[in-house]
Image (cartoon, rainbow over all chains, first blue to last red; front, top):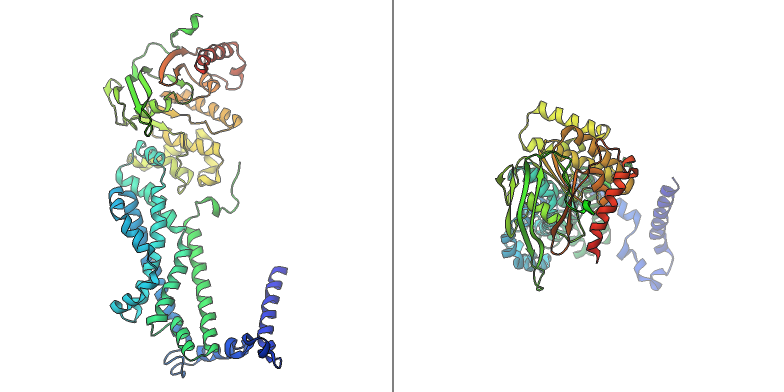
Amino acid sequence: MALVASRLALVAVVLAIWQWVPQIPGITRWAPIFDPFFISSPARIAAKFWELATTTGDQGAVLKSGNLFVQLWATLWATLLGFVVGVTSGFLAGLVLSQTRTLADILNPYLVAVNALPRVALVPLIIMIFGTGLGAKVVLAWLIVFFIVFFNTYAGGRALEPSLVDSCRILGASRRQLLRTVVVPHVAGWTFAILPLAMSASIIGVVVGEFVGGAQGLGYIITVALGQLEATDLFVALLTLCVVAVVLIGLATRLEKRLLHWRPEHVGGAGQA
Amino acid sequence: MARVMPRESAVPAARAVVEARDVTRRFAHGAAEPFTALDRVSLEVREGEFLAIVGPSGCGKSTLLHIMAGLKRPDSGAIFVNGVETTGTTPREMGYLFQEDTVLPWYSVERNIALGLHYRGASVPDIRARVEWALEVSGLTEFRRSYPHQLSGGMRRRVALMMTLVVDPKILLMDEPFGALDTHTKTRLHASLLEIWGKTRQTIVFVTHDLMEAITLSDRIIIMSGRPGRVKASYAITIPRPRDVIKVKDSEEYLDDFREIWRILGEEFV
């Protein structure tokens, strides 16, 4: 209880400083950062948030159509798509390459090269190919998520203990049974462990895609707000994005714990000597 | 002095179930010249016998077990199981308990124990009955739905043991299976193993560096010399069964055997 109270108190103090310190006469001469032009104010942000969230249609400069939730949905949907496609393909590629040594040896230098290239540098090319819609955002998110998941899954696949495989083979497992009961569960464990990180990577991909070539989404609001030097709009978009990210990464973390309930670090105290 | 020489085993002259014939294995050690891990090793394991193999570390005893199970190939020599050459392959009637933890962490205790039966396509009622038996004899019934990480090291070893025993292997190879456990847990597992084996009576080959363990459990001990690994002596343990794993260590026979084998092993330290 005391913890929650302290946290709330902290928020209250920050909000109070944010709201009232800029009103001290002459303060911006000492500290230009307190100019509401840069930092807006909690009251204005709340009012703008309410306005963007409740009215539909043309909302002047920042939103040509739809309300805040339409933009939020655009970002959310692209993020989930990028996450699912990236995790699935990264898992499959990691599984196959970790189990076929020759293929991995052939592809290794190219994978390293593609991974070394900053993904953001690919944005113009992706927009040239996929336009400015949903496709480009998802492809960008996929490219980032894929490599994170792939490398972790691949490392997991290579770390499979030979004794585990030998033991099950002696018990009578066929190649198919070995794959289903030993290799896939082991490799998937490494994939599941990286889900929260994959989700935040997907968010980065989508928002960067919206910065550069978006016509919709929270990243798009941020760029428009910047173009018009509207700090209030910027803060509305940032706070909404923050909530979206916290929820999505929280869900990914819960999914990870659910899927990896057999791992020691997720025990609920059922251990005994 | 007479006891140094191979004695007759307590197990009556039964036919050889597993036979290693002139098994040689060399290892290339990077750029260094290859060393011989096993040098023309020959031995016979009789039906229903509990055979222990002891020797200094690096004497190739684990390698020999790997070769018997077909997990490694010898450079020369051959393995026969029931008179048929099986070099490089694993016969279906063979079970193997690894030194490493081989319980699958993503399955519950009962799922792990049932694994071999599933692989071999046993019927559902058969699987159920066998798993119940395994849980019962190993004292794991109340932990059947637990996951391996919730169990202690000793209990995970019990699960691993039952995973191999549940498919009823006629030959069981065990590679330092209790090496990582504390003395107390180890002794309890010895008692369980002897109790279960008293009923199932498969042929067991048990590799260990723990001489107390070898004498407590086995009918016969093969003593190996190190680098190159060779069979140095075969020593019968005639302590009557059933054995009490605690009391046996206090008996005259046990102490005599211990002293004698210790002396043979001691020659290796020079």
